[in-house]
Length: 546
Image (cartoon, rainbow, N blue to C red; front, top):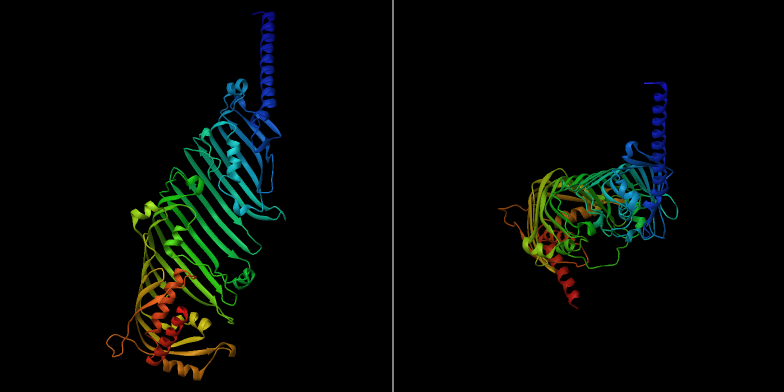
């Protein structure tokens, strides 16, 4: 081959390469000049997507958008969301559809290290499904025929609209949605699109509704195909002492503190309303290592009286439809504390090592008719001294419930941490052999039975104002007014069969406690004191009838 031919071939190759280069550059220019307009072509869109630079991938496999901004077109007074994405990759673009039909047909969109800033509006508490992040994702996904949507190493910051202070933060969020049907988006749904599978992993959530309350969640996991929903290391706490928190609230309400290692929803079957109302149909909910404190300051005024529902009404009032075969509770603990009127020390009682299950939990009328009743069987330990077994049944067709409580043997001195601060009473000696309480409760009145076997009961009254010194005379009178022993086989052995009246302005738990207390007044006091109690009770009944 002569040098002339080589030169001609070289020139031809260069020309072809030059033309190819110009075609590629022209293709890139057309993509760059039209891509942003294409993704923002919907006149009804709520958000605008912009970016600093567009890089076309090798062999036209996709594009990479650098420093993407997602901003609302018409920010109002409500919650406002903006997003900044380090870079977004768009893979599997059908170029023919894009170039000739101006249509985005895409295999996958991935946001790498996105930061979403959510400015909370004044109406945040009224926000319904379909708002916020759901609207944002739905608005983005509507722009293309899309199979897969991915967020990797994302984060979310919640800010107050007035002060601009940070109210909450999600440090890491990963989302993978596959087999998306973009023609069936559900804008008012919790998850705004139909998907074949959805996997969400969130690490480290913090939220501060005010300057002293903190809500934390260590990890959240959800997988649609596995039918599993997990919450790990959930907690609610305060930077202030609970008494100070109660004073800020200004009325008597339970101050709740809690932490729980894991809450799991297993065998989750999303119903037709799962996406709109988070309705739950599940085989099982597990609650592991729950520790909850309920504390009340009796020195504050009560809130206005409102009629309280029974257990059935509480279940029916749950604002989302639920159908749960079993709730399994493992290693839970509940502490109730109370600061009495003009008291300086909180009295508390702790029930721990709680294990058991609740079956047949639903507020769906047709399912209630089928299931018949809710049943709870719980065993636990009181003050780490004795076992307590609870059996609760709540029929769905009538406003009643029945409960049976059995407590084993224990020294009554174990109750001093509760009795001394609350009642100014200290158990000096006393052995409880057993307690069995049964209650069949109607909406207005209950029928009860109490068995309370004890021996060697001796107490003293404490003068809290005088550094806890014993009230000698009053203690002697009190011990003379009670029956020190109540054991089977004794001549004056007592059990109590009686009725108690419900206070409609108190919870069913209060109904149970007051019924139990009335049983004690029929066994522990001596004969003369019981006559006084019965006489006073008759006077109160006459006043109610007038």
